[in-house]
Image (cartoon, rainbow, N blue to C red):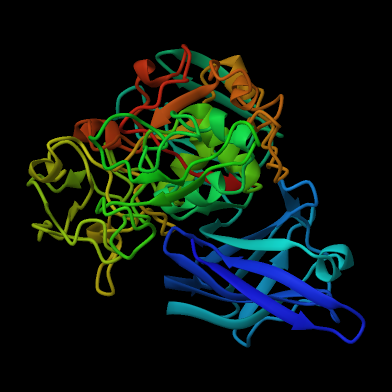
Length: 498
């Protein structure tokens, strides 16, 4: 991450504001500045493959939030004021009720690259006029509208039974499966009926790097596999070399002075960090539940439920037996070859030409010869200017890699610990020890780092066969009943905003 230093002169004070651009999941924030006379933060933002469909009442959006460095040196969440906002023509801004973030999205139907110059959002006067470092973050998300949907296809392993039709936000009865004979789910548990936003991609390595770079030394010790004072080049999340782990220590921390490490991505191993070839767009594996819960809390998001997962994949359509996220039961079956590995334009050759076969990164197709191991790929790697839902492997609402790449951790309805989840969004701040979540989150958000009861895995990964990728597959062995403090090669996750 490159630091942009801005110096602003005000007749009353000399204001030194150090503003940093933040990059996550293919979205770029740049030219960050503060306008003290109007209590605003200003920036430019751009992302590819943006759309809005008024017919489906569905669009993608940038979820924008800000962190500031307090006088004690720690990074804290900055709430927006909700006033004095200004966005370019053709776009809208929507500040959440808790003021913790803002959605930016198209105002009218259209598609293509979204490029917003001079976005202005209101922030408190204390941060607008004080001497603070500011970091503006953005995550690509997709709006999922309120409405009925079907859970279960009656063919996939332990599918929810009999085309359960969620026609209202009221209590849902009779959801059954082999390992959960009868379940009653009631709000505030997110049943999927009500509208929500879902991350378009799995957490990227660049996004998790940015998260680590806002933590204290003590917080970093909990959210990494190796101590922050380890030598330059030490991997953050694993000691293994397999699986494309690209986040490394660029500047070691100091335990004596509690100085946190600075992390960077270095896919090409040249000790020059965050270059175009350094793999920051690759999905971030080796995340345990406590890592994911802390990231989602920090980003003011929440875990996805398995009912929301099925709605994101299927939308309002009737289920297709054994279907994948792209809506058919057919999937590519020949191994891909990876090109420009680690670059921002990383791409695959050998994609399926069958119009009914979706593309996905799983055991059969994953480019093993390149890395001799199951590997995650760049987020959105199958989506191009000419791809459709099937060839891109996208869900009904345009969320990518819901089948394949890395496992999704979702809140399950199969046990009381999962059904106790109330959909609470994160506050933006994690604990001094690096934990996040709330008492209603599974395992209390991973606070004790060894309890993930209430979660299950969905969507498969590059390490597993095609059946695990089916939308309605609910394998009993994928319900987490044991400690989840191990960081595995094929596990990641994404969040929603309820």
